[in-house]
Image (cartoon, rainbow, N blue to C red; front, side, top):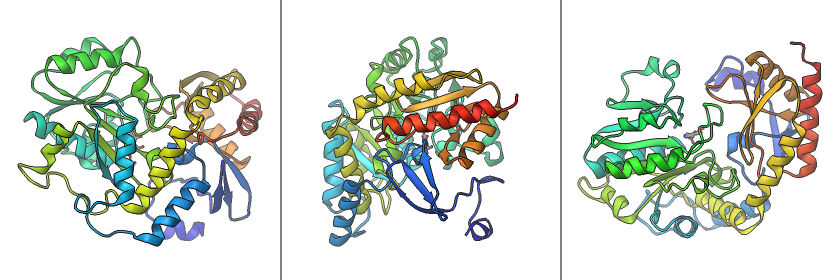
Length: 393
Ligand SMILES: Cc1ncc(COP(=O)(O)O)c(C=O)c1O
């Protein structure tokens, strides 16, 4: 399979990890030789209930038996999408009342950026240095990492970048700004938390100049940080909330959520202001609904903080300089990038899945399923420590 994978499937890097997958269950992925790999990555935060959670599988199968795609987004009332949007509204502040479902995170970012422009009649967007919001042209335009986008210019005009956590930079947000887009916790940059009431200050500045605040919760959302949404930690409610990844429970999805009055602008002038064929797909929405019910109906979110404590207690080693992040969105910051690479690759050979972050070469991603058990955490941390003991620096 690996030969055909390299030969026929378009590649994104010269050296993909290339694990040949047979099946997956719970916190484990099994390769074609039936070796079990403990998953500390959760498909890059996209499988919050682990692999093939029985309630998610049941919901998907039940929906498959009823209907799959019947019509483009927004024309017919389809129960899984309606129930999902309703449950999201129930769990969000009352200003975040309507959701538009998309096929991926980057597409939800596109929708949010368009909505900010449409609502304000302004064109300038402010984003943050080292931000990652996706890979389509609009989302890439607000990516704060020049090296990865220069080959694709020209991108969207009128984008400015401020430094995350820098309060002085907030004066760059003015009455010309349509929207400010920020990750609640910067992911690709190295799991950087907002500090010193930063998000509250951003919110106040946006209010002053009547600019819309877009928060990208595609990574921290759905319980990973110990609250359902990351912004709940920071006393800052966005005008437009963007979600994805974990929302789908292992299926492809994205969403942007806003006030009904704001969202209604996409219906008119021009009508069909944002359209998609497959957004809100019933099978995917059924998976998302079952996932959200499980996350909000169990103790998984609060347990996340206990699990974080266990990781922090166990992962003490001279080669680990720092552990960044919150809940089960953790990054080990190693002494250098070479140690990071060795750790990830050697752990892979020992049956533990770790991964990189996009823009911080010293970081090792630890974002396991929220359902991971204490024993599994202990087992994986033991593997990390024993590999670190073998690394020559
Ligand atoms: C913070 C953030 N925003 C946007 C995206 C893009 O989402 P997708 O890959 O589903 O398009 C990602 C994906 O990694 C992300 O982490």
